[in-house]
Length: 553
Image (cartoon, rainbow, N blue to C red; front, side, top):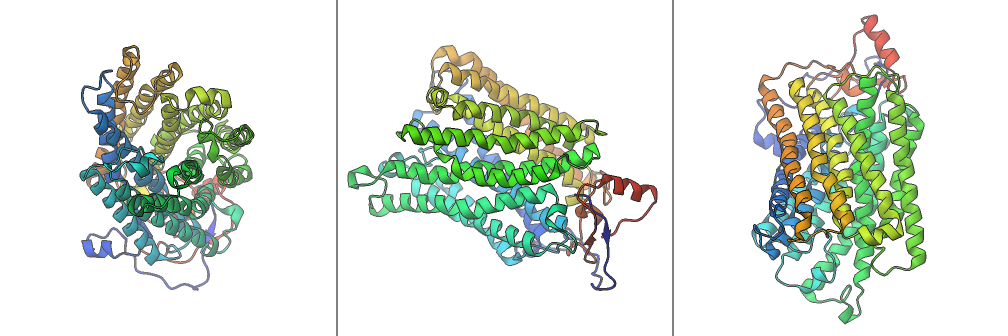
């Protein structure tokens, strides 16, 4: 965001300049904190922990598939490994990481607020998330679950040698964390904007997170109900999904995907908000078509509730329903395409700086575009019948969720790391890591498009020998990709002690969060800012720099 800021006449008392990272604070003060910035850091630590667990499961999958004969893991164990990978990565990393980490840290700063609307509920949300995650880890220790991350009925309700109840309970508890976080963000954005911060002066980051929060609040209760019914069916034998007792297993599919397809946009919409901020900063321009990009976030949120049944084309829904959902799935690509076009137009004749956040941004645009275009294949009824249970779907999902969302997350972490910690990371290593991640991702998942098209089913622990060469290439790419993930973790940790002092605005970016010290004060702003200019007004920022007008907090 780019704004011009002035201060009200002595209307707000000055606050002591105490940073939320002051070393004298102990562990207890962190665990009982109501500071949105500290809660964001705790979410970052929690989601990184779960990412490492999910990543270890992914490594086992790729090692298993090096050979076609299932040499490493038994069939049942392999089922539990890929189920654990999906459950941990989707529900405890991809869904919460961008909203809970960057959203918590930045939303109050970007709108000129001193905290979120409900600080205690914000802390409670973190405890719910960690409780759900711990339940999920305990589920892995005590036997695991072999239903996949989708809990497909009747598999999840009939077989007793799997920890379905514990797995569902962990997600059920963590779901309340998502609902409360979404509610908190909605109220914060509505009620706590600084004077002059109108809706069309908001950063596009805020528009994306607002749409994400609405999806959290409206969609998450549906999967909570579905998983509660699965647990009740296993524990007390009610017949909601069991056809032997008058239930309908297809009902679970409708309930699950009614949440899980909007959840795709819960994962990707925050990334789109991040990309808008980075593109504007490193092109030194206002985002082209600001209004169109803002409303495209709203459109994605709305359309996401009308496309769930494209996951069910082979499950017996009527041809008419399949046709309608196929059309709606095609339409949901339009607002995403608007964003890609407008980011590209922003870069056109822009003064582009290829710093680390911008490299990750370019990687996001490339990977997400491939993911989106391959989604059109899966929205087409004839192609979907051939591809839906193959590795083509695995590749498509990962290009959107992992290639797209994680690239955007890395762009955001590198962009705001100086603000979060007050320290710079080594720029040369950052650029190397961005290139390694892009190359490793394509080496890992592009061969899976070919595997899927040739007919290799997903979730199989063994496969025909003719598919081995592409699987070996995919596993080798996963090794490169792992380096691309581990390298930033190492230099981020290094930078905490040895990184160069960042200053308040190392990127010369526009926006309220860049007009406060790094790391920010506990209360964010010494005085309440007043916003008088549109977002991304880099011309104003350049004039301010030339005139040596000091920025204010």
